[in-house]
Image 1 (cartoon, helix red, strand yellow):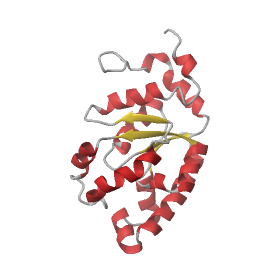
Image 2: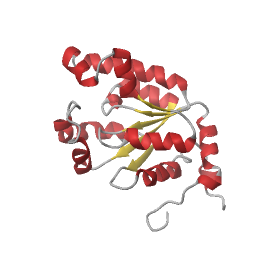
Image 3: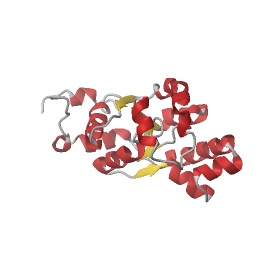
Length: 196
């Protein structure tokens, strides 16, 4: 890191090395709504040349209704059961970057699947950042509960293989930081430390 900015790894072959080291596993982004999982995930997938999948979009497609509609009509337990099934199915189709819903990690079965079939990245964001980003989305359930939910979820998010701070910086900077942190959990740390 130089002056707070990480050099882009484009000319180092890091992208190819990371995808090979994934060996068919997915990169799963976890964190609260508003952490940037979808927008940063899309950029990360583009950088790595692998597909991006948003679990919430897949859930809505499978249910043929929006997430707020699922919550309203069937309740949270029904939604969480469907979410677990969808994430389990998606994890069979790596390598990919998979953005999960904020509460997905609370399910023990989902956590076990992510541990077994993926590298997990927690996009950690301060509560003020989350509140600022989510207040623009009036259609999302639970926005007003962020302050309550964050402390309950953080211990589970903290189990992630990689933790990267999501903040008000260009998303490409966050992607650079994810790329720089991934070699270690993928067993590439020694290669990363070799002089260029």
